[in-house]
Length: 212
Image (cartoon, rainbow, N blue to C red; front, side, top):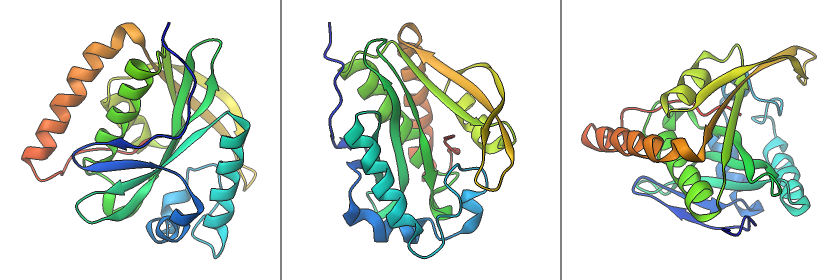
């Protein structure tokens, strides 16, 4: 059986490079996340506030140390700029499953090919290198952009968890869950490769939001 353990790794594509998250990325992440609108549906509150991004990075690294998460900083290779962040979370070694989430991008990198290639790299590593049998995604039921983005990569909608979470402002959140299982990965992989070929031919003008 493929080793299901997870440790920091760099994943390289044509458009993006996923680097293990570190405190050294805090400044670039703060610049990418400076628009308060990015955080409307996210669970972390407004990370555009002074000092909030570094505190967030420290929290996510604490989760990594606990073994539940493996976070990445998304680097846009052509510009060398930080595009955003994503991670594996809820890593369940016994069940060979995990979630891809906590995904956000700066406004300049939204609706581009960044998200498509990021998801491709994460899914390929999860299924082909680490032997996952299930990868799940979730998004706020009100976040139509993220819902469309997750469906667009080929994930199957499973259902809604009502009153799933209380947000930092006290609102109740319903979460929509999606998944891809190992038997579906070859078809999803071909689909994503087609999407990436399309955006490479159109200067990277397609893509979507990532969910959380």
